[in-house]
Amino acid sequence: MLELKEVYFGHRHSKSEILKGIEFSLREGEMTTILGPNGSGKTTLFKCICGLWEPQKGSILFNNKDILKLTFEQRARICAVVPQEHEPPFPYSVLDAVLMGRVSRVSLFSSPSKSDYLKAEEAIDIVGINHLKDRPYTKISGGERQLVLIARALAQEAPLLVLDEPTSHLDFRNQVLILNKVKEIARQKGLTVLMTLHDPNLAILFSERIIMLKEGVIFANGLPQDVITADNLKNVYKINVSIINWNGTKIVYPEVSQVFGSEVAISH
Amino acid sequence: MTKNPIKKIAIIISPLVAGWFSLFIGAYHVEPFTVLKALGTMLFPFLSTADMQEMAIILDIRLPRIILAGLVGIALSGSGVALQGIFRNPLIDPFILGISAGAALGCALSVGFFPELPIQIMAFIFSLLAVFLAYIIARTQGEISRLPLVLTGIIISALFTAMVSIIKFLVDPHRLQSIVFWLMGSFSLSDWKLVKIALAGILLGCLPIFLMRWRLNAMSMAEDEAKALGVNVNRDRIIYIAVSSIAVSVAVSVSGIIGWVGLMVPHLIRMMTGPDHKSLVPLSMTGGAAFMIFSDTIARNLTSFDIPVGIITAIIGAPFFVYLMKRGGKESWGR
Image (cartoon, rainbow over all chains, first blue to last red; front, side):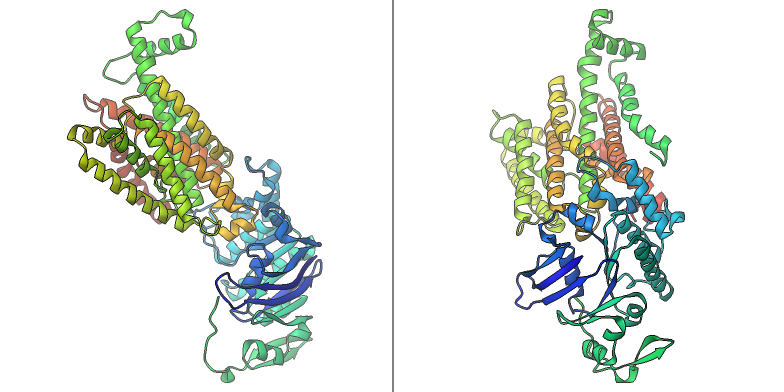
């Protein structure tokens, strides 16, 4: 469904390229995770896929249509984005926030119809936050707000769901809860999911395919058990890890004493 | 209308209530029944039985003034709420892009050097010129971002205000007085002709804001987020800025510069009935109309002469605003 061909991207006034020939495709109904250290180009890749930034070379195709040739409305009906940072300026109610997902289906001079409200309520129901419907979404927890944003993306009724580090602001319980919810919904609705994660263990648990990104190049792309290896993680993250096999699942265990150097990668 | 229906209905009919009371408050005492009779005569002229003098006071002096105040209130708070939404900032007022400074310069030029050119037309032209300049300067590589636009608005305001100051410094005291009076804003020159001009201009500016109001919810998200939701942010932002500039320029040219309304009314309404622009925009418009009619009624009745209404809006507005803010605590800042 989504196909990237030789995508190159660099900022207008900078010589270095952030993405250097990214090429992969997503299969319908699959959950794919992009792993990679800070600055490896994950966020840039997402901006390109969402049509916000235009690659210098290469193309991004959705069902063989170039996404850059689509209007904002058309793109939003194909690809729903759950953003990472979210600072709402006004205390909209949860229902009003979810209803914003319908904006690509409401014409310029009109307001949402009854059916738009029904779709928003349905999305709220699917995510399981009915009890929050009338609460201002500035006054709910981070995990609950993430669920609101997922509901908003569902209200877009797009076949492709893109999540930018959906767990980055959440506690341990909420990380698992949210990803489980996404997986459940994606199965139920037949959505194709593309997300970025920081934790390889979560990636193993919740993805059918993992793409590893290193300095703007795809380092590995395949099934979780093939991609998550001690060598790959060492190469991409510059850290020694042990992989423990437990009940048929892999567990990544960092070797704390042997972290290479002490320099911290600078985030983009 | 699902939440707070009583509050919302009250805000919607508030301009009618304010206008009704304002009709028989004034230096010349008029009975409510006479007001009814006069209004009846206006609608059905053949039934005329009313006293001509009272009729003239009600129909030719008070009514156009009340309607004009209401229209200006609609324009200022309607564009205030739209601009606060697209700039994602509840502290933005409709003059942020240099409209008031532009209007002031137009007025000062007309009074000081070109008395043959009407103040209203000069004010209108220069206020649109100010926004246009701010827009052109803020435009980089075909994109218009929020912060540069606000900054260039401030720069244009500063530049135009300096030019107004030069003119004020150069002209004789008699002319200086008319500039100063005009800048404080007033409805004392209202007549039906001004009402017609204002109605046309404000309808042109405010109708699109009203129709496109729900979109402001998505527009108030971060730029990339709004785009991902399917909003053509650049196109829609230009539309909102253009139409609200037209509405405000028309308002300023018929009434001078009346501050506070465009900042305060949307804020008050948001505190009272919530931030959803689908209801916030129409409620701000009617609330702004009622507040302006109320302020102008005070302005023309408090003393034996007309006090500039801009002074009244600030005097009533500031304490009420402080009260609501203290009562609402941190919430009232929009969080």
